[in-house]
Length: 294
Image (cartoon, rainbow, N blue to C red; front, side, top):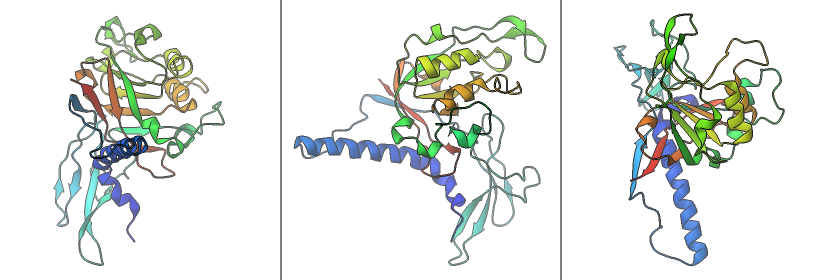
């Protein structure tokens, strides 16, 4: 029996297909209830489909031992794969990770490229968190698609200051509750900016708390680079990683690193990015898209 981790490499294309199947099924059911017949009343005519997942090209070891170079994710992490053969029919399959790769022999993890993370499986070891945090696989499927508010912080131009590394120069400005005037309760929030490095606007812990507990958003999606969305990684508990704490502590998943949010022209779009239906996974790769009305 094959190791089921082998099949993770095909998840990207499947998650969008799954979302479309779910939507088709729902609309077909409504048509049946109303007595309608014929074609399912679903069409993407009038919408632009925008790819939000960064493209990663795997660093692959072929059957003959050759290493084919790849393109890493926005954080610089590679996807390393190696080819193998099935003993029962000699067909080729692909294995995640490559301990024989001298440059990157590490096992693969689920926080590579566009992924969704949530719940106690990820930050359950932190102090002072709610007891009712859900695991990613316990969240209803509706959590991962729906109306989304697009928040492009291009207007938050960097200012003179001192970076976190103590260097003088242009630094990013804080993202504040007043910058989310068009966000509605229950929205998926997609954030971006054209700035890079120390010049990126950053999400303070108090703003993350406001989004989670007062605005009550459904999910947070971040373009990377573009927004520095977490702070105080090394602060003493319970003040460390406030965005993780406030979002996941309120069962709000976070999806990143995304791309092309800054190319969206509308303030509101429809987002789809489904995780795999695997238990015991604290995160999952996703293929994220936005449907933008033309």
